[in-house]
Image (tube, rainbow, N blue to C red; front, side, top):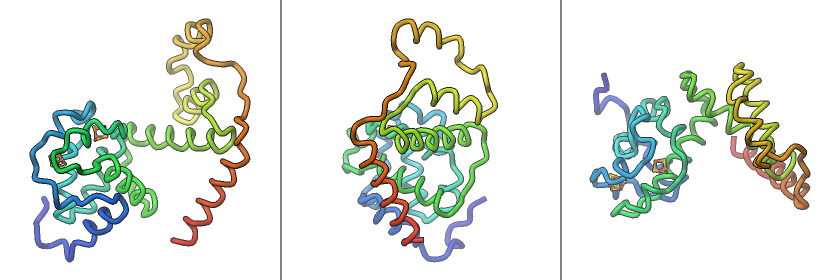
Amino acid sequence: MIILGTQGPNTFLPEVNARSGANILECYQCGKCVSTCPVSQYMDFPPREIMQMVKLGLKNETMMANSTWFCLTCSACSGRCPREIEIPAVMEAIRHIAIEENYINDSTKVKEIRTFHKIFLDMIKRYGRNYELRMMAEFNIRTRNLFKDMHLAPKALLKGKIPLGVKSVKSAKAIQRMYKLAEKLEKKHQ
Ligand code: SF4
Ligand code: SF4
């Protein structure tokens, strides 16, 4: 049970506002974001509730919810928000804080999503682009689900939807430099 008023000063709201560039106080709880969001039914708390939780400074509950991990960053919600709140940026800011401060939602789905993000970023770091076949193989290995979606592979290969080899993009080195710089900045702010 959450007892409001026992949480101490709300430092969470200004932090999320500053990181996302949004003003969550503008949210008047109309719920348009919820009716537009394609995955709100799978979230512990749909976007409208996440906005309210941040306003109330319920950091732990927000961090431990699966909502921000399920968010697809599709911007369908912000496109309809009458207060023009950048909801995907809010979700992203919360994800960043969760990673930095080590909040772990240990549901299998959230773990898989986090693994997927990590593999995707590693792939971009290495090749400057995604390499679907390798990504699928790494994901299956790391989630110990070796044959997941394997039945789709022959069809996709035959149709040329999945390239067999991978070539780094021309700007791969520049992308690697960008990663290094980002890692340096991250360490500086820790
Ligand atoms: S659509 Fe905008 S104002 Fe309405 S509940 Fe969602 S975030 Fe708040
Ligand atoms: S950006 Fe996230 S919260 Fe907004 S509609 Fe898409 S999935 Fe839902």
